[in-house]
Length: 498
Image (cartoon, rainbow, N blue to C red; front, side, top):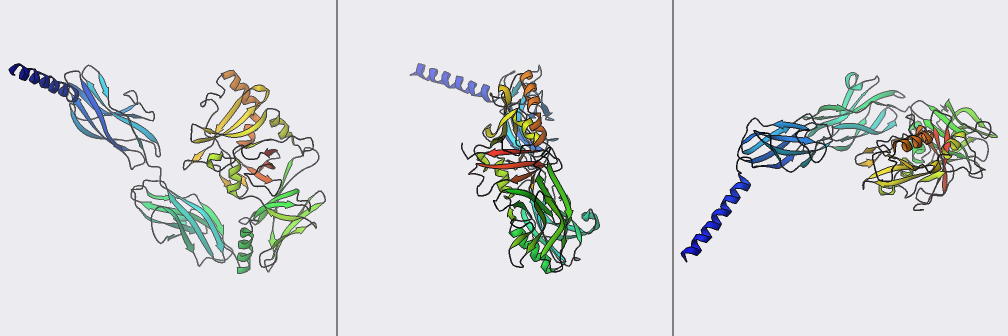
């Protein structure tokens, strides 16, 4: 019995020594634990860590945007050495960015032990933005939104500054919303001058960010209730921009009304010569009762377009050649869906260039078509959408990642103008991307007309050629036309999934 007791005691003693080595350590044995990483700020994060062991000459935190930071990345040493728990604030971070932080312990001879890496995302900057503005006689209704920041922040006040001159936050008056906070809000500004242009900026106030402002926008108050009725009904009918069609429903012209500048821009495609896109801009004039907008007639072949008539209730008709009709183009959401992967509400397969012999072909079609036969949208890395172009002569594929905003593909669309931008390159992605430098250079050169067209910062006007089809149905043609250029291309959109 005594021998059994001694054996059991020896085992327990050995177990106890083992526990001491794991948790406290002998000289040269160190453990580092990353206990907690958190952030509610734009540029800093707080890390709580513990280190164990003997002979710890330095302890601290290292961090990076990759998931295995070391002392070769950014680091901060604690003021104390030795075993124990400590808290450090790491600064100089970028807003709205995910970092990985982990604790380290270093001996006097330079041996380092690391804890596990834990992610932390800094708060994005607080933003204020004006989303829409509706004009009335002597009044404006401004819809705006506060976003970004951290949910723990308190937005104590939000609203809109307005003025008849630029920089309304310094030259004008502010109207606060009924409550602070994040999200959408509406401000009604009354008692304004009739038919007057106002400058607007949304604002938001928080202790963490101070006062932030939106970009400046403008809006012009209306002169009479009749004017308000005309434009309200025009917007409701989705005819502030649209398509002029012939009796056979074929595309004739495209138009955009700029109610701020009181102008109309009419776009058509030449059928002879270079077959360029033509943009004609003219000032429009309302009649006294605001039942008509007229401008100098724009003539295209046998067709003229010189105004829009309103029946005073709901119907709008075209002033010009008999038999022509106004039809709305698709909404921004519908246009957006054409250029977004199906994971984000778009079509499964996007489009291909249309170079039929009977097509009203512009040189830009030939330049692109000869080197790029397909435009498609694919899922990338599980959560990204990419535009993919099949290169000519078997050169392979090139892709561009959509710019993202609020974790979704983002193509800014104002009326019928879509501004394309891409934040990815064709050489840092999936295995089927071009890897050989020479091949990539050849593909880039071959597809340069495509890149030049879509990445023009002036944007493009999207013109629907046919009617009666939805984006998901496909099987229709679309024109894409540079807003301030003669270049245009024509795409054949496929049926979804084919």
